[in-house]
Image (cartoon, rainbow, N blue to C red; front, side, top):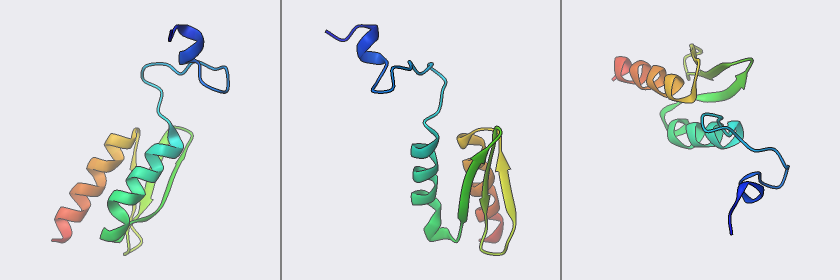
Length: 78
């Protein structure tokens, strides 16, 4: 049955409800926006970043906030 031991995952560390799987979130952002000219996705020290094809650095405190910043930047160029 899936008690607390099952929720801890392979590392033995139980992830909190609001913890983000950084590698997965970065991969999803890259998959969603690379075709739009965005690259250099990273997350360090609580700041999520992406670089536009024009060299603009976009940031957010969360993956969702970065996604909104990219979307607003992309729409401004359309």
